[in-house]
Length: 305
Ligand SMILES: Nc1nc2c(ncn2[C@@H]2O[C@H](COP(=O)(O)OP(=O)(O)OP(=O)(O)O)[C@@H](O)[C@H]2O)c(=O)[nH]1
Ligand SMILES: [Mg+2]
Image 1 (cartoon, protein in one colour):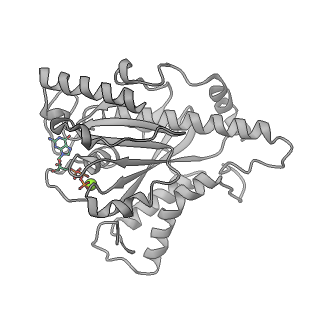
Image 2: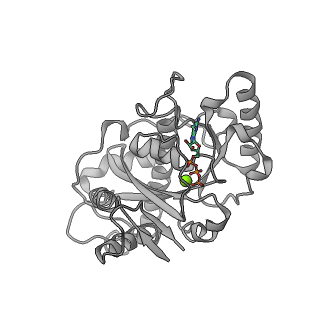
């Protein structure tokens, strides 16, 4: 596997800061204080309006150092051309590119949040939709806490949405290019999507990477319709689950010395759980390869066969 990277210096810098205990503060629109709402109650598996009581209580003890920095792995999958990269770029970089540049292999972004006062990051993996890259992309699925299945709302095909085994992770079904549909056509596509989301045990969202919420088409400007709300929901659900798992592990292993499952916010020594190590490994591998001078400085970061 050959690895190329251009934005690595920027991204690795972002990643470093997201993992450093006292990095720069997150931007205001990444601060989540109340639990983000669903898109449609008919296609939502978590109809609740507040964080779990134990999570809220644990977050309040932050000053006592009970909660450390956290990171969750998110993988975005779906057929080619559905708009996976556009969705991620709209959220992470606030840009929209009309030109199609196929993703080759995989790519990732790290996005930092502050949830209930706790620093938290999503590592968002963008995978190639083209069949010939599937085997590379699938090598990066392991350790995902959230799976986002994207499909093109305007190009609805039932067989384009392959079965996803609902397991321990959250599954989202995301209809893209919402700006290209209106009225009855949109309602029909969404009704069909909700039906499928229910079958898949997934939460459904319709989004547009291209438009503003009022429907004005922009190439650069505020985040696309529902994009920020969607990722806030992803972050909050993943965060809450992580904290609950930590609390559960800690209560069942009280006799052990220290909190081996957290990246500590204080002290020189960091420890991570195996899931986090797994999630971090490919990014570190890219950074390592860059240091060794394997990358073209002008190439976009991607993993090639
Ligand atoms: N109108 C509209 N076009 C979009 C939207 N999102 C993506 N597109 C366009 O759809 C095309 C494909 O988008 P990509 O994001 O590259 O698709 P992808 O799923 O990442 O494709 P692969 O990397 O090959 O798997 C591009 O020309 C985008 O400009 C959207 O919300 N609205
Ligand atoms: Mg892509």
